[in-house]
Image: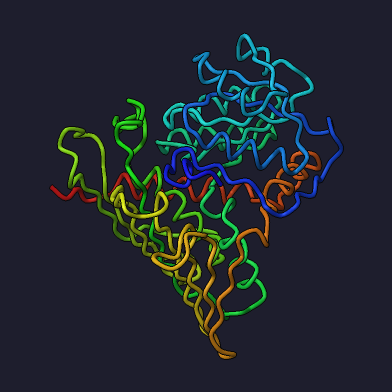
Length: 362
């Protein structure tokens, strides 16, 4: 990982240190990249390439973004228009990181052209967009998949999922998540400060937290009990929310509290000290995802305490990112092993609900 993207969450693009195992032959799964508004497109692309995907096209209205992308991925050809990609029968999936409020409309176009869609989070900014996307998935049979990177592209989170599946802490009762991010205000695009475009802090970076809760606790549904947002420290950007938190109760009785913010201090060795604490009936797990502060600049630390004792697993470079290979196989075989469509939509729906009902702290 370069130091630049360790410091900057917007351009954080993990590369697997585990030798990737392609799940398909070269040319069997062709994909394209569009709408390069968020740096997460690089993480999405890395994951698909490592799993065996073949990158054919890239398109954005900004030639400088296209040029930068092709510098990173010289195999990509610059498409002269979206239609070049959408009408290419070889392209099976379009990966995109559009401005959040525009992600749904692009997804509809992609699915209407018979292709699967893989968008950066947050996938929607309104409940109306979600309802329309549900209908489109039903009528086209295409996938609207989401890059919930703080679980899918983090080895400690992948490892925690395996521990829970194996029964290491019993039934999950509660998930607590913190998602602090560094603001890097001067380098952010204009849309980042417009609420109608980025959707609000709970809708945006809160989407990671709600998705993780549903996954780790095994919930199919949940209810937002309380949520709040604030702009504590950025009066010059009145539409920015720099703090948010929420409490949820899952359909199986598990609970969730999460906090997201833009207050990572400059002295931290990475863009955010993201942590997750998972309480079970027989033990608990703590994830220190990106750093173990003042001890280890390397991330992906898993702490497990159960009836057998206390354990620490340093899993960076040990686990890999199975989601991307599973996604490619799901697209080829029309299965749902990487993530169900309902899970992707439910996480999105709950983060929009949390945003809509949030108490604003003045």
